[in-house]
Length: 220
Image (cartoon, rainbow, N blue to C red):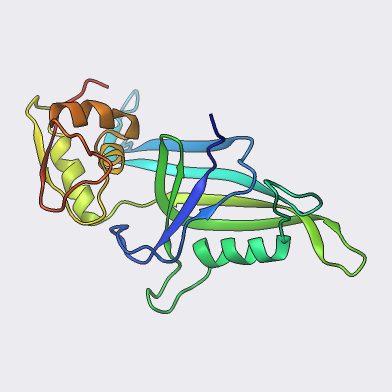
């Protein structure tokens, strides 16, 4: 089995349909990553209360943090990395301001079944090795993302939280994929096989715009 590498794709729109350039495939997969999800609660304290009564506020896919090592001291997969060039490419993809969208791009991070949609908040570079002329040949890039969900998907999520056992219906739009939709609805992209089986989808990797997909209520 060939090594599957992490990929970052920039998008110019909040629906993640307008790809901005080609995906960036890392040369060395991160040794680890941290994906933090959280539920937010308000905790009012009525006068004389003997304890907390948390009141649900919102759910968030939270934050994604990982580091990428850029090593230009040796060929990787037959290619010698130019550290400065790779850092510039990463910065442009995920951190730099772009006038056409009046903000940095939206970013989708994928690695195997893992999928995260968000925006980059922190871009730290730690240079650790240089040529005699000062050119960096080794650096570690620390990336921190905050999750992002567009308003249409938020509405879909709100409809999926009603607690009934009925099927939810969703009208496929351009650029949708089944793992992405499962990630939005269930918080876990791996349920796409169950949904594909329910909807009798054969070519579920390429959803047809205008198709109605039914999502079952899962006991997660």
